Structures are given as structure tokens and as C-alpha cells.
Image (tube, rainbow, N blue to C red; front, side, top):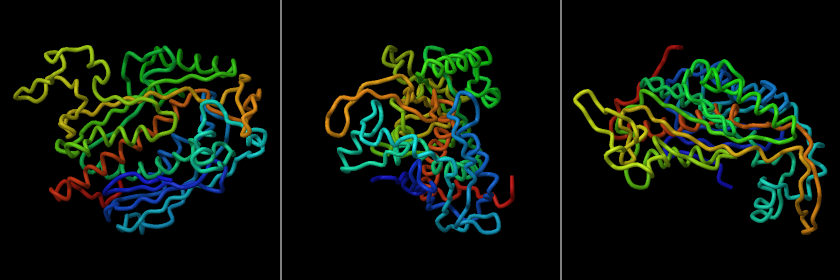
Length: 360
């Protein structure tokens, strides 16, 4: 089972939804980077369940333990092990589903591939796996800050409601993480109405990376946008990826799509900050389509492991919309992708990497 991402800066996540703990091994981190529990915890707190009425009511404090690779507040160059223990798992909620293939879940495919599956909260295919990504992404974020790169994500769409403005500070002030002051309440209401109806909603998460140095990414097979697609599409429930103008570019002419260069720089950014698989220095703008959560309270039909048709309803605690909690996960994967590309570029240009030895 593949659980590793990256080439130079690599992470390997471990753990299941209802296991004793989840976590990550981050390898290849340069020595001398200032890291603390607080730095990692800050991003984990943004991902954790139970934050508001629009997320699952599961109560996990998600307190990180740094087991190795950090000494006296600085990375040592050794593998960094980060652990988060689970304290509020209720495996009994899934006992009735252990022989059923739930629609929209990985139950059938895991069984087809491995011959068995962990039915407790979806096991390895649960969104709880992303704890390790976010913890490792917090460290990658510090690496990027050393070169002036900032990564921010937000919910740009829930159902048919689309954000039209971008107040990024406001995105962290509302439970939906929407940057539009007018649309955020509408999104929140739509999510709560879906939950009340026993249903769920999908949406779109947009990620903006500013201050990205030009020259990151390799042409052909290891294009930076291809690596971003790999990282973001590896997040559970993500069903689509686009960068820059994305699919809208299919309806445009070259004269409309080309980003003209001027003595002051690029006049536009339809390409989303990447040309030929290499960063241009423009802001990188990517979007992911997040499907509605498959765990809904509405009665559904399915089949069991013997192929017999069954009626069932999913009980337990589930997110009615994943976008608010996917935001920090998406940020983490973009941070990890860009930090990996930065370290790869440092093999050619060692001066690219700036190590922060003092707390920010």
C-alpha cells in the first residue's frame, strides 16, 4: 500500500481512523529549521474535527507528539516522527456495516484489492489519515517561509454557491472558510440544511501560493503542476484538479490565454504561475473539486459481501461538507510539493534554501 509522497522531502503517513494513533515520518528535512509543538499544532487545530456545526461532532484534540528529528527546537536532519493519538473513536457505530459495501466509499475496492478491509470508520481510507499530512505540511510551511513563500487555502464553492470576492483573512473567521463575506453565511446555511435532511454537499477548495521563486519544478515527467495534481488528488474525496484558468481555458483562444510579458513582469496569470512545468514567480492558483461526503443518514440500498441486496442507513458522526476541513489538508499538500521542489532545485542552486535558526 503506497503511503509515501515526495522525492527529496518525503513523508509517509500511518494509522487508521479507529486505531490507537495516526502520524507521519518526514524524511529529508534540512537541519537547523526552527520547529516547535506550537507550530505543528496550529495547523492541526485547523483540521481537527468538532470545530463547528458544519463539521463532524467527533471530539479529537489531535495533540501532536514530536518523537524524533527535533532537538532544542531545531531540526537535526534526521527523520522527523510525528504522532497523534486517537481518543474519541466509537468503533461500535460501524459494527452493522462490516459486511456491507457502502455507496461512495472504498469498501468494495479495498476488499477487491486486499481481500479484507478495516470497516471501523473506513480504516486507512478515512479522512483521519490526513492528520499526518497536515503535521508534516506545517514543517514544510516553515521551510517555504524561509524563501518568502506563503500558502493559503479557502472554500470557493459549496454546492451551487460560488464565492465572488477574496478576503483571505475573513476565510479564517467563519466556519466554512469562505473568503466572501456575503456568500459565507449562505454556504453555512446550505450545509446545515443538507445535514438536517440527512444529506451532504460537495464544493471547491482553492489554494493560493504567493512568493514562489521562479524556476521550481522539472519539465516533462516531473512538472510542478503534475506534482501538485499528484499531491492534491491523493487527498480522499478529491475528484478534480485544475490550475490557473484550468478547464475554462478550453473555451479560449490563444490570444486570450497567453500571459504576455512586459518589462515589469507578466501582464496576466492565466497559467496559474506555472509554464512548461516550471514556476514563473507569479502566484500559483490551484483548485480541487471535493465530492459530497458519502456517509449520509438517508436510507440507501447496497449489497453485502455475499452479493445480497440490503437496505441500510449510516449512523455515527460525519461531516456534512468536507471543504472546511479539506482546506488545511490542501494547504499542507501544496506546502509539501513546493518544499520538495525547492529542495530539488537546491541540488542545482544550493543558495536557494534559507534556514531559519531563530523562532519566528
